[in-house]
Length: 191
Ligand code: IMP
Image 1 (cartoon, rainbow, N blue to C red):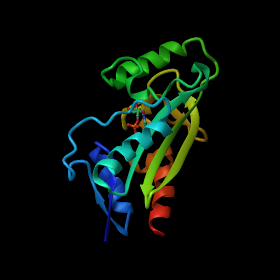
Image 2: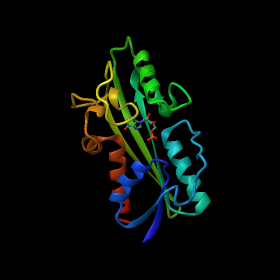
Image 3: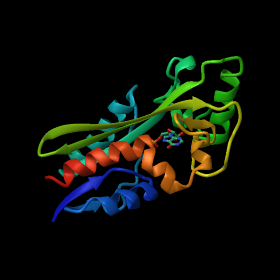
Image 4: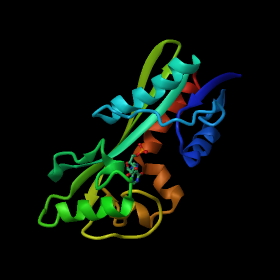
């Protein structure tokens, strides 16, 4: 079976994706002893997905894919966007990030937002991108405690509850990341 590296430091994401990919041997950052932080210096999530995938592809000559996601809020001109993890501070603190979003939207009636994921796959010297988007609204306050990041303040369109009020299974059926991963898996399972 051919090797492919999923470039991620997030073990939960790795396990989830490994279950779905049938015809490749999925390799992790730790299998390759990657301990350094891979630079994410682009100003788009698409650019950062490429940087991460390309870093490991260049270093190890392996087929690779990497994902990058963000929350884009219309009334904030697309912020926090590519800066989603570190919107409020350099520490990647979800609580502070949510506080800042709610403060910045205090007087806003337009609560439209979307989550987006890009996956960049480099295989056979070709670059392929897979995108997943989910639209919704930012709530006035935190709702629920499951999930991570901005889940407590994001209510997907067509639902009356936030991502943080859903089970992981429920969220994983509709999320931006799930949509992008489904497209990637379909592509890889035909390779
Ligand atoms: P990553 O690229 O998947 O690490 O996502 C970057 C940042 O975007 C995270 O640190 C979160 O702040 C935010 N984010 C991405 N996906 C989600 C999600 O599904 N729920 C809540 N926040 C998310």
